[in-house]
Image (cartoon, rainbow, N blue to C red):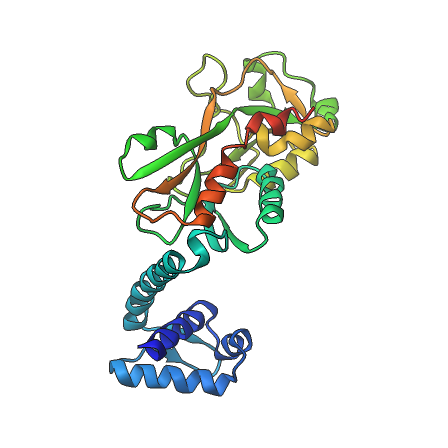
Amino acid sequence: MLSSIQDLALFVQVAELRSFVMTGQRMGISASAVGKRISRLEARLQVSLFKRTTRSITLTAEGQHLLERALGLLQELDSIQDELGAGMTQAKGKIRISLPPISDVFLDYFAQFNSLYPEIELELDYSDTLVDIINDDFDFALRTGAAGCGAIKAIQALPLGSFRRIMVASDAYLARHGIPRGIDDLSRHKCLHYRSPNTGKVEAWHLGDEDEMKLPASLVCNSLEARKHFALKGLGIAYLPDISIAMELRERRLTPILPQCTSRDIQLSVLWSRKKRETARHKAFIDFCGGIHLNDALNPN
């Protein structure tokens, strides 16, 4: 039984790294030893788990199915080990978190958490893709507009605060093109837009009482960092979350445009599944998040 579990763990490493050599280096064994153990596992299961070429290895359909089952099994075994061992009383182990790519402000918080709990490994996945916090392999997810999810019995939500989207531009851009004095002036400016990877739609600018404001586009991308970069380079006006540009606003590298025309408050919450057993590391992270206040990032003094 123990050797089977070890072989499954080895298989998962190979599936994730797509390399016998890298797996062997990570686990302290030779690449040939990795290959032999995978071959024995395939013989025991009577299926081929990988398609091998001289340049790469990829999962077969059976291998993909086993990977999905193995990840769940290993996670459950990890939870059992936490229950029976020190994991229930000592904050240690891995925490996997899904985050939206809206701000670097959380990096400081995660650095603080890592300093407080050096035995907890944080795995951060930045993506706009919605995840299933109940069934996917994530311990927590930070999501916008998520406070209402607390009404779902299987999901617990902890509000972290709110932010707004605001229009900003560099002084260099405003010197060349002028400062918009009203919403109508925006139609004569270069605007940097965002296309959602989830819906494929270009994000509308919600400005004050206007439900939606469609504006000319000089650039469209699905990256917040790219829009911020181009705004800093003086290429146009960007519509960005204030927490994503807190430093640039404090250093006056970006200037708010029509500050009376901001989006409504947008809630940001941390979510986790009630179905997953709470370990010491999960409790430590939840308690830590209880002390996060987004306004601190915008007004550090």
